[in-house]
Length: 192
Image (tube, rainbow, N blue to C red; front, side, top):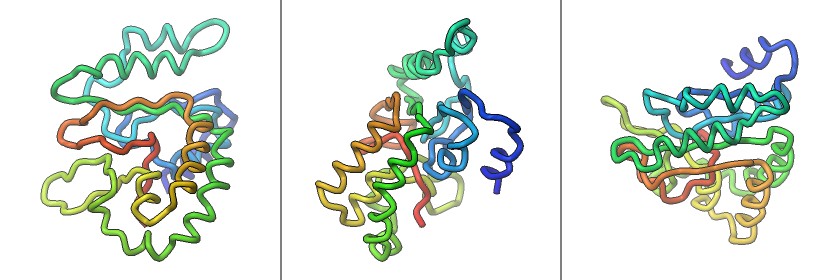
């Protein structure tokens, strides 16, 4: 509901949306906003409290010719790349390429529907941390979820090609706080 409310509240197409907010690099968010903006800058994990590098953010985004959203993402990652406490994940998504990703993923989600429904998520790359007394994760890597559901190497290569077209920039450290980041494509999704 939030995603569609946000998209409906923006009366014209934006060049970009940068979320200095946690866990926004989901395929669900990107899909909902694909007609609202041309690019998204988002993180599949949490964002450290200090967020983006505001000392350089405006110089990237207020360039007189074309905003440098990728430069803002690169600076964000550089800020946390060697941080021993946090780490970072970041993705810049070309919303115009999301239709191609959907066309590749749609038949795979149909083909592996039962396998996906039976996944408990224990062997799928997660992006969120279990907090408090919760005993579950909510954000899983899109490509790794398909791998665990049984997608073939050829099918996963097609997914990667579509991701390569959709992701202008993706970077992640080996860890984000207590989450190991071993198999990250840059886009998360909810486990259905």
